[in-house]
Length: 502
Image (tube, rainbow, N blue to C red):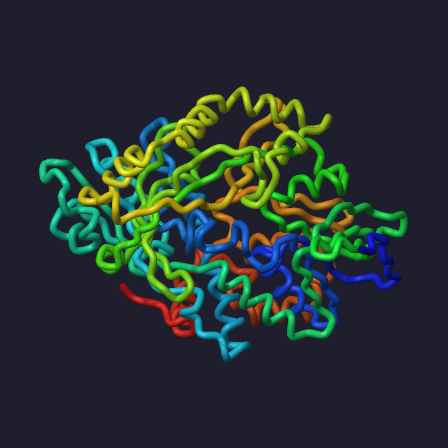
């Protein structure tokens, strides 16, 4: 076996580390904006989108803030904060525009291979929760992005929306729900593979599976030297690149640490694992057609918001419940138990300890989730499906999420639930850390990255014109323009074959 490093004098324009939805989105955007860019992708697994972007691993699909209650927290004074929900809803509309552009461009891609109309429902029970949902609904009506949302406390109407959820429920129990017919289900694994297949049509784009990035270092000339190992043959290779994007999901933090840029110092990661209950009874699967989200348990991470979730996976309708959170020291589903301890460095040990001490209840909650029995999981399911039977469900392991820990002047370190783009001052390297809402807002996240790393090109007439072609609302605020939103939604619904009216 040849283990010598093969060096290339060629300088690549772009290296993408990780073949998930983020790298696919960035690669697709860059290739459209500047077709002559040379791009290489390195993925440690044998196929694209096998980690967090995969349908079975992704905790949420089609996140548009229509039904996810964790994006609309109730404040101490009892009011409901909706700014994050509005931002996410707008970002999802941006994503749909880019996906529509790709479908129109490729012609041979059927949109239903990755996106389908699926109603989004929020469901709660109990006096206080019903009061919260009513306030949430009223507040969201201030934004036209939530036009078409319907609120109900009528058990009969709620039964029409979601029969499995209502059947067998105590008739005296106070319940409420909201429904958005404009919701979607998105298979990000399928979408990622579609984008990479398109990129592979270019002679100057190469995608290398079973390749692991071992080292990356910026040289004096500003270029990045990346050392890669072929996990199949054992051969090693070094490449040079003008720009590097680390989009390796849970694997991004260790690579960011290896890059040793000042902007990356102080970041840590807190891994959260997950599991699903997967329905194996076709009759039950067929009777549910919605994403029904409830309220997260006190102390649980936002990615663990329980939902009874209709999905299309590999062309078949599926029904999932969960995710049940858990704790593992792995940063990737296919990672090592040493991932967490090896990520602790001198520059992030204080933030990690501080965040850890501040989140002891969360750690306790996650460990309790790991220790749940099948009967415990069934009881949690029965909150959303009272007539559920054990024999209709089996356990499926979900993906890993690594939540961001960052420096904080006041507390030393804080745990954040969201995504964070970390980029070097010279724009030569960037990494994406964190999780939810992630994939659904990938296009907006990558546009932000382009602003940081390609500022001059982004201002050029050529790039501006192309961005407007791909994303007609680019440079404008959908959240403050009802007419533009309506026009955009009608166009994307036509191309992506989605519901456009309630």
